[in-house]
Length: 322
Image (cartoon, rainbow, N blue to C red):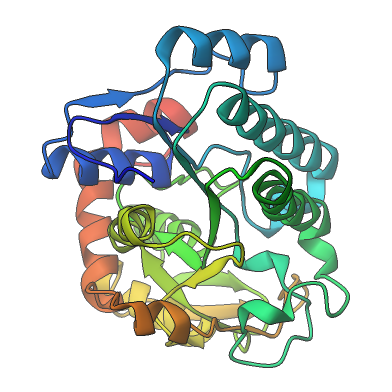
């Protein structure tokens, strides 16, 4: 199989999102010359005929399939049909078109929510489908599991070089700060920022603060994706993370210290916690020679700088207080 090269035709499906934009940055830093993208207006990834036409016209050789409908606990709880429908279709259309039009290699990006709620920790790749899922994001998780199995099925039946990577919780420049759909770091960052701007010294944090979570800077994920595209070609999906976790309470304190030092954190145990712990076993990826580079404190500070620099755009998009 040919190796991805700077002159390869590379399609980043979902280029405008948190992960997609980071992959585009990573490719540009290595001087890739033909990075193919399509906006939602240009291409509905849920439409098989439209996706087939686009692949036929553009002939990508390598595909990073990182598009999808994503969000935090609130978005997953209130829009379950949207999450399963959109994601099932996006994965199906792109994978099938990649097969039809001879893509050399495709990397599909899943999510750590694919694993059972009461999973042994740290979570090994082999624990997939060994127990019930976390109810608050089950439809999304089912769609992501289907994406993994889809890539495996195309490998087995057609010999396609389709691989899957499962990242832990992500954050970084380009994150979604909409309070209705953001993930935890972006949600906390916005909450503490708006409290500081409004002179409020108390900030409410959902849940008990006790669940443990692992966080990976999106630029580290982009680096890992290119690493896997270059050097991995097997059926089993690969966990991508730091191998380190902390409680939500500890995370809230870290964000508070960067954004609004001195503010009081008030926990709201009436709100859902989600799974008690999610820590990925990343020993397989470490054994291949890859390890994350961005520490959590530095990464959160970097993300907050980006947030402050883009306040004008964010205010227009979802009403962030300046």
